[in-house]
Length: 173
Image (cartoon, rainbow, N blue to C red; front, top):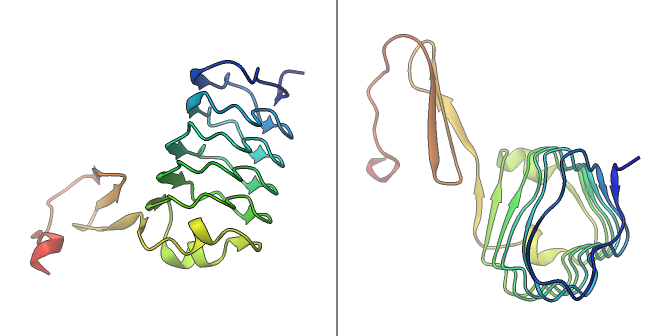
């Protein structure tokens, strides 16, 4: 039914965009694809199964899809060159060793608050992500009676109508 991506040839190299409509990345679908340098997920992906990207050492950045709910055991195990990971607010479960041996992760962007982050189920072996020293949470707030702002991944978005209140930059607080 084209909603599960089952296999990606190990010998292929470069970037790959997963087709729209795919909901599940199957067990070992990209396993040992060391030549895979970038992956683009459609927002339809909700599950990344066990060992789906095991040993994909060519990945440096990983922007997970906005509807993702679960990352299964060993999904990104051995992705030793990952430095930056974007995790959506929708994520609920990260099963055992999903990010094991991802020892170079320096920065995690999370699309929710710290309280929401603390409610994600992280099984053993995910310390590289769960305990990363640089986790940046989405910032939200009000800057007027009917004006709100969101700051995430380096982008400030202001929505609403009416006058904005005085703004003080974060560095001035």
